[in-house]
Length: 486
Image 1 (cartoon, rainbow, N blue to C red):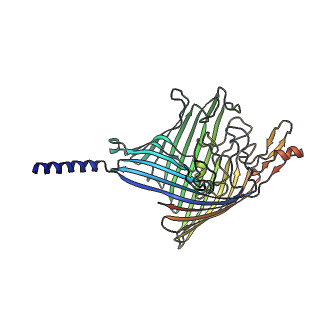
Image 2: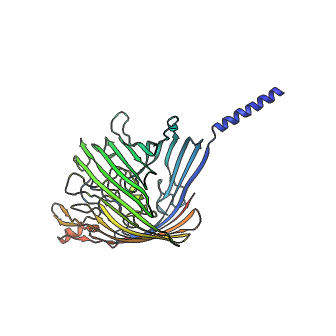
Image 3: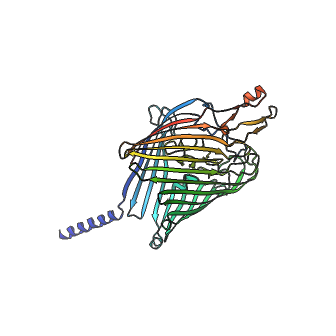
């Protein structure tokens, strides 16, 4: 009996140690959001391709031109993390959407279909994050492998969920990342895929601001990622430098990005007969905010951005472009009507991004100068107001509008106007902290439209025998968001 008791105790200890060895801590985080939109001419349907692929301006307005619109949408994100002994973590990340309440039957993003029960849940990310043994003893290093968020200065360049491997290493005061991501994979036995390689380095703590820099290189053997016809090849790269931090009461964020490369159209090319061309563009962004410490702290700030646009008469492309699939147009916190803000990521005119080609994003072809102020009169409310001028940097044409100066009815040849004035936008956002995890925000913006948003009416021009350019009603938007974070 004693021997059996000893064996039983030993078995319990062994099983207990084994359970402790494989113990995993589970955690969940995410949010649920309900949002409303009401506005006019504040949504760009992205009809047509950016001039990067097909020369000529984008056709801005669709059949909602000068009509008011209103809708509701909902999104949730749910992130599960399984963490083992602070050394390794597995992450699975889900997202679900109703892009319009009462939408038609379908699968992706149609959770608002009447009677619900849609297949509207998406697998957003799933990856392993672990410390590298041995190396981490003197240079702490982690590796993330799988489908994950690829982010490099997301407000001006890149954020995309995709498959890849990313390292993060700290060597003394210097930190650096190495990247390899796979945007596209063709046939396994052919060199028809696309890869992005990159490195980023930054040095926090030594200076009042943290300096950093990066380089990304994209080699694509079927370009854009899947052109559908022909065999296009491209070598694209992005080189950037930045600084983040605070000098006294002034918070700073500064970015400079250069986008360059070549597109080599071999074989049949795309349907439009695209020829070889070079790419060369840049973007500069700066934000400075001064905080006055008072009974009601007051933030006063200035934001400026300039990104080159294309010359629509030149085969080469001098506009600033972002990588394919980047969600940069959804991320910047710049305005409510023309650009994106924290509460209107799906509502803005500047939406020249693409999942299958490098493109303008929101910054390319534009510049702006903005002043803003924010105040928190009570603990549960914050108010922010802004005013900004937005200009167009595309040459011999406009980034969004397609107004014409000449039109040949017989041949269909068009000469586009070259305007520099997108307009003046004013707006405000109010955040109400209802509970610790529950916030309601409402924002309104109004854009006094300039000539660079005018559109060419082909039918009216052909009928009248003269140029007819249509000036849009001033775009405006009112967006609200109720969000619960956990």
